[in-house]
Amino acid sequence: MKNSEIKALNIEELNQRLAGEEEAYRKMKFAHAISPIENPMKIKETRRLIARLKTELTAKKLAK
Image (tube, rainbow, N blue to C red; front, top):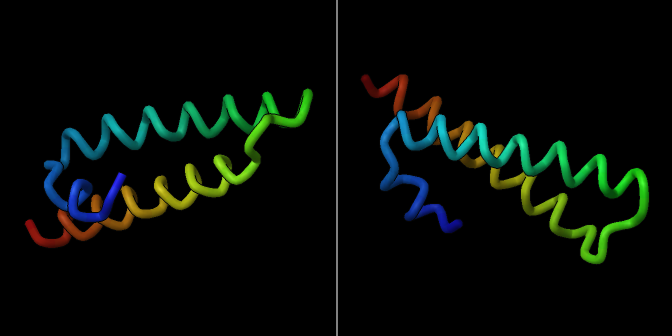
């Protein structure tokens, strides 16, 4: 997800997307602990996406 797409989301959509990504991140970490996943860089990408979503959510809350 690109930054421009993240900025276009409203607060409700950001919260939903954040919850989904955090759940996917937990599942990926668990799967990787049991047996290595095919692309471990996906964990890093998901973690960074979560950080970008949280940053944008905070910025929108402060702007209100």
